[in-house]
View 1 (tube, one colour):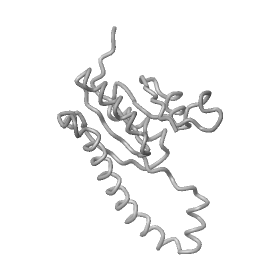
View 2 (view 1 turned 45 degrees about the horizontal axis):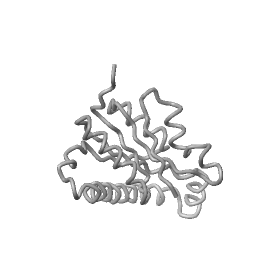
View 3 (view 1 turned 30 degrees about the vertical axis):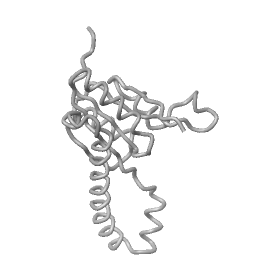
View 4 (view 1 turned 180 degrees about the horizontal axis):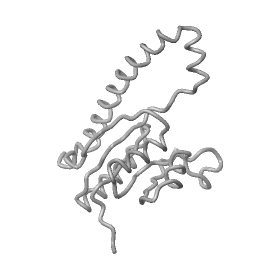
Length: 162
């Protein structure tokens, strides 16, 4: 049976060239009349850094600051993602209707992408991959590689270049 993509998850790290992968997701959505779910993951802060800052500031002060800053940063990134989608689709504003939702998640990027794919029951995951160093043609980016290795869903990996 030939697959029909009704729902596509596009995960972005918000790098300037990540728009290339978004264009692929939208192109597939056009062909299949699909919805695109956009996600960005705020990565976990290293525990050693958190412990150091908590020691200097005090745990209570740090906890309050983390919650308020996380909400603020999440809101800023959400607005940036919406603006990104609008600017990418300026020439085709009708494609904005294909964007079903924009989410900013917090955690380990590969795990959060996999959880979102399951929760949304998407038919395809679209990710960009950054080549790292001299071995860039031999290895995918660590997040893309983990997602590809741990999912049973189809995944489109779009090379993002330099």
